[in-house]
Length: 122
Image 1 (tube, rainbow, N blue to C red):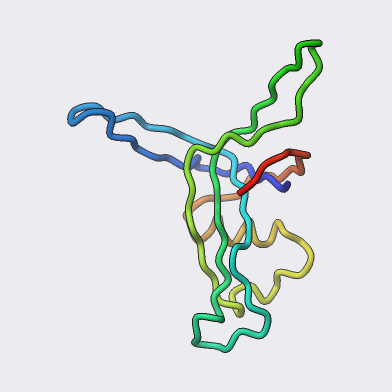
Image 2 (image 1 turned 60 degrees about the horizontal axis):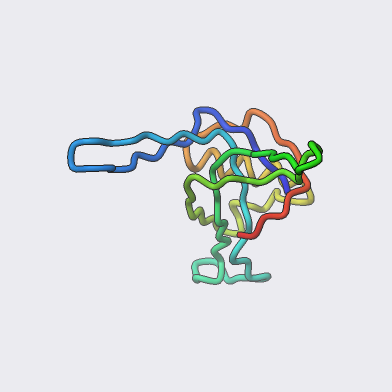
């Protein structure tokens, strides 16, 4: 799984009580394409490419013997981002291009990316 480090961190405000709010921050982002129609017609709903984006942190827990478990992506918040096929015409085989476009659309910058071997389902 490709994980992007973003800046500024994503922020979500939870209303705990009528008078108390809690802010949660996440500086990692992952994405999964949830809708892609090959040959979609310009101007139709089939022209939309949709990504489910999750923000969170990477956690590494220990096994009883002290070795590391596979990394987990702890999701703190999510977003849905849509592009037209022409907006992603330069996608190619480099997925960091998509992460940069998603981050730009949401007002973030991608600082770095890393691949982690994680068991995570969207």
